[in-house]
Length: 292
Image 1 (cartoon, one colour):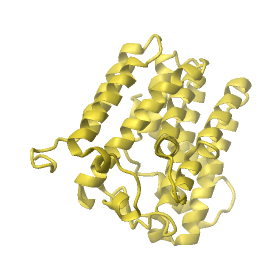
Image 2 (spheres, rainbow, N blue to C red):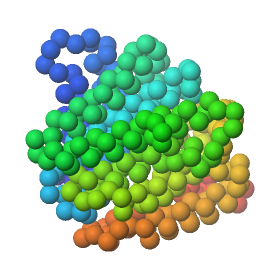
Image 3 (cartoon, rainbow, N blue to C red):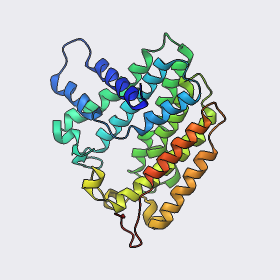
Image 4 (tube, rainbow, N blue to C red):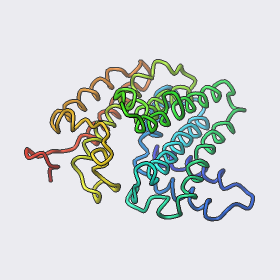
């Protein structure tokens, strides 16, 4: 089974748990599927699985659950981010955002349900390796809530003065750190050595997202653009310019490769980071607009 197929199967299985075998509100059940499929690039669960495989992947059921749980949290964050009280985005992944397709109340409930479901999916694996699963639950909780998870990242946007480093690490970096650390934990390894790799990938993704937000249109991106300027948020392009942001992105990704801990699959992980470097770095013409 290929990695993408494995990830999609794990996510589908997790969503099925959310539907359950009892009578459920049909619209909310439908919204859970709508919010999670078809997905985006599944970058976070792919990183998690890649780290788990590099570390041996000796309990694949736990790796599958961890990957699905992480993606459920990510999808929940997108549902909430798109709400009128935050980004007020009408489009996500090239289709109407959940609150546009189902209503604001159902969007809130969808995001909440996905968060709870993520932890249920992990907890259901407790019999396989209780200590391992407990560490996975703790890590995902820390990278989701306060003080340094994605909730904190969203919270920074309501402050008069923003700590840029803390904002980026929480808003974008937190779930990438979760991806590398949870991949190691799922395979029975220590989490701490994998923090730097996750942080660097997260920082690179933030800079790349800033570039896409500044350079691409809504049709290309599949979601509203120009959001950073609209909401007055910090942006690498505003700070460094287009070419400066691209140089910064390449430096971060080079550091990410250098930070990969020693493991059996180290070479394969380095190749994965290089692949993402090519995908994340936009081709920019001399005029400062995306190339053909």
